[in-house]
Length: 85
Image (cartoon, rainbow, N blue to C red):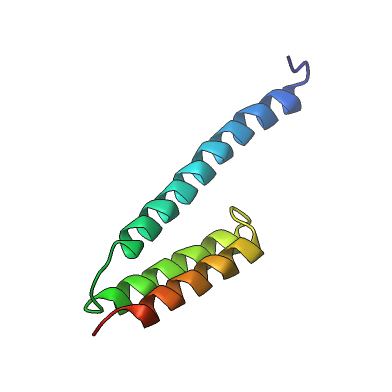
């Protein structure tokens, strides 16, 4: 257990940041799952833009790794290009 006031505060703030980061990562995974389930191109472009924006924000904040973000964006683009018009 922490003995210093600053260490106790660090534990509290780390817990809050952990929960917030998990929430954002889970939200991104849910959006990705919904995008993968799309069957037609109608509306997929808008969903793709929102998803790529979300992935970029998470990578910028170091919630996900930049290489993972690149891989996910590549997968999203490939899926969009494979969809039927």
